[in-house]
Length: 253
Image (cartoon, rainbow, N blue to C red; front, side):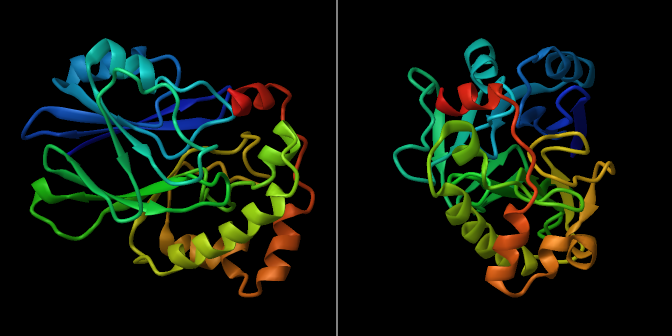
């Protein structure tokens, strides 16, 4: 299996390329708008980008998923969770597979299992990765997007603060509490590949370390230490910074 992470310093945003060395196929997870680094890496390493996926509908940057699908004919794996207000609207004419909790898709001999992890956004999903081409049925890690960061979790108040949808901060916080209970059940050895690092406005205390593990976050992440929902909701919503103004435009679009 081939693995490469990409970091946009201005947005403190991570994206990832995962490739199957047996078939030469690769997938991009949460692509940035500028797709050149993915194209250059694929060419250099001998991969064809055959698939693209996203953990959620982004508010802090414009995704490059549609461009990759349009220019390369890559297949899109997108969340079908959330209500009618949280569906992807750019998929006409593209090869798209909508996925939900429990869905499994493969890129070559690399397997992705979908977990529905709402809280930051209602349709948010995470991907548990297993390198079956490497002869293992044991999962290696999880792409958490804006669900679990290193030392923090995704904020649930952006829709209310940025787009003015009243009441969504608390409901999102309660969804996040339930999602974290699901995260706590994962094996401690799983690597955590987050969607953002320190400097992002998608949380309030993100760590600067690019990766973590489920076990480390269980021991050190403030949010995973909570067992009382009311106390968790209160702390999560307290002192969240004001979102940048452009978030509202991306949320509404």
